[in-house]
Length: 474
Image 1 (tube, rainbow, N blue to C red):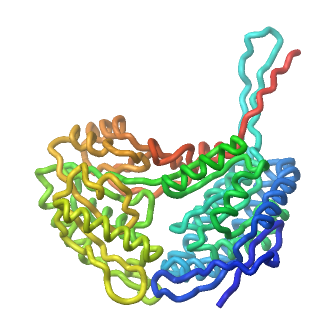
Image 2 (tube, rainbow, N blue to C red):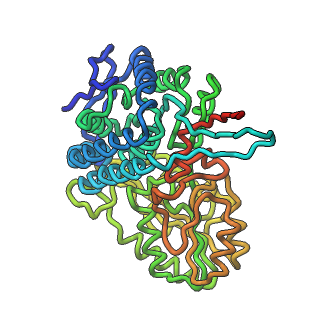
Image 3 (spheres, rainbow, N blue to C red):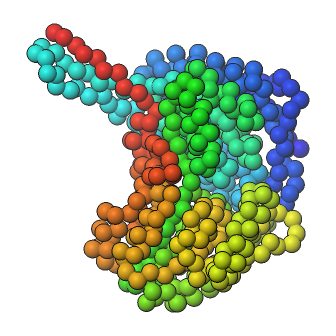
């Protein structure tokens, strides 16, 4: 059994206490390893190391920082198998998918290295004669990065790569469900030659996380997580008026028009709902089907979702894997039971299987209503509720009748319908005739309770900067 230590100022440190966090394989229930739980003093030391390193890192030219990021990306690729093995064991993913996640993380690291010569300021006309207004883009300082369990390797680099190229340093708190892969990434940090203190990675409880996030040196807190977690981060930000960047919950609606390629739409939606057991913030969470094709599309969904088998992906990578833990499974099953008692029809799945692992079968619910909990609250699991609508106006009204606004989907062959949805949907993203995939050169940002700020692309990178206006008289 492996024992992982926290990574501070370029070194794996000897723990200051005996407190450990146990990590279990959600597919088997087996103990994968243990990680040291950082003390408040260790967390403070990590922030201070990051603050000291930032003074040097921020003075490097952006092209020098880019060279470091490219070396880091090379190290991530070289370590992809070991990172993937750790991630597979702690998440229930297949080794192939987990290793590819590490390689994809290397890709986004290289992408952000390319911003080195593209972080631009502005020259603004002044109202005063003989004067220029120069707007500079500057690093914020120390960034606290709070990483979720579902795609912990990719999301970790999605946060720290833009932070680093902009001249910041980071303190990372990985999810306590999937922390071991983060320490494999720390080994890649060492191998790459990144300066000590630029990247610090620690596991911790909530109280210690508060110590990090409320430290006076932390200027930005970036989180991918739930709405409730986002509210906690906003409370942390109050201490020093730190900047929040929050990617929170989602409830992706998929609108299926009568002219859609129904076969392709059904296949893509089922794949979206069953990838990583539906534990994606952009996975399709509710399906609105035009009434003239409702029965046909429901039959397609039922056939395809019933064909998906679940089990340990370490033995068969074609299977759908487990949920993160027992409480997640119980909460999802309780939502399904409440939906059925409220009138939904269980078309497939909807039971807790026997045996080890936190598995839940792909589940399809018909006869749902807009006011049901299963439509209004995020499921974050392999459960797909379906509703019918008369026309596109009704579909949009229902899709927009929601607290969340992260991603959205429409399947149609009509450019008029596409443009109407594109100009009306209340969400940060619209995917046309495909399901969400978060291209890293785009901008992944939510409306409403789905977040503040966002990740990816130019605008995601600029989240990690602040401005300085220089008024220059001549």
